[in-house]
Image (cartoon, rainbow, N blue to C red; front, side, top):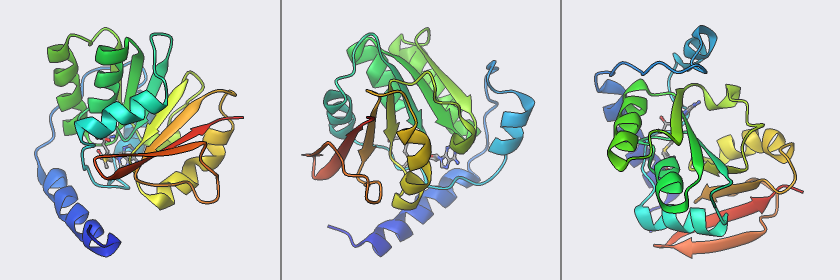
Length: 191
Ligand SMILES: C[S@@+](CC[C@H](N)C(=O)[O-])C[C@H]1O[C@@H](n2cnc3c(N)ncnc32)[C@H](O)[C@@H]1O
């Protein structure tokens, strides 16, 4: 297992490569209003490191995602979590991503997966996103970002499930911790 410092250094290299990629145009979205785009016009708070498919499956399993759910992935990368939620569980999904080339990639993947009518991707700063519609929130960010999001997540409707790949949420005790492909998956159910 890599030490956190080594993991972060590797992450920074991946991040830099992604930041240097040419940006594809973001598709029009009603929620991508001018102000949201302005907030999105800054560097990501965490690099793009995709969650492996087995861990995505475990995150959706522990959250018991079903057809009535609306899954928000904060920092959605290439869209794999919301696309899997729609394709494998019949849910609706919203991905929130600051990097426009990743938003474009996610939209194309959703089309290819045949779920473009059930998922959407917002080019937005995740800290500015309204989560009132969410029944499930998924995260693969960093411990500091999880802790910063905690107050907002704790105010969501009772029963909302929050699932985090790899990182806890300060002293908010998880309801469940499982392991997939050597990675921890944390579940909190909002009380
Ligand atoms: C570790 S990746 C996780 C990607 C995806 N959720 C997954 O699990 O495969 C974190 C993502 O968060 C995005 N991100 C970082 N800071 C953000 C912010 N403030 N608002 C929106 N997205 C952000 C990054 O661009 C990156 O794609």
